[in-house]
Image (cartoon, rainbow, N blue to C red; front, side):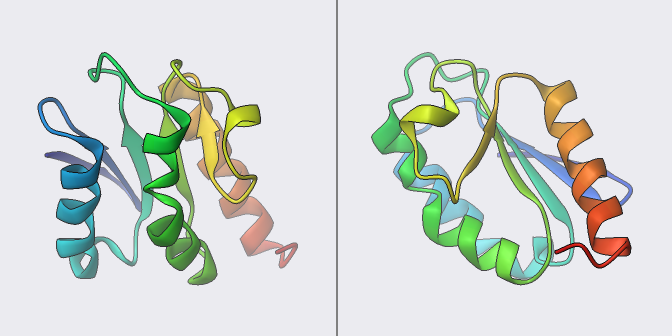
Length: 111
């Protein structure tokens, strides 16, 4: 797992593991990340299914309940294929834009 912190956002990239192992690792490190917005970059993984993305549902819901952004980046699964509670976008730039928009909404008490 590679962590890259930029301001209040941490980008997490995974290169070689299963999604289940990745989510377990993320949950183990969650105390360090819980105050950051999280972008999970899955671009380096060759095969990802909607079922794989659903593995992130629990941690995504927990993070969003704490008023933080949790965004998954992959172009192998579309947002129509996963539960609406999971935020998924096809590019890293869209993830940054979404986090910024959600931050503004939180600042203005829209959420």
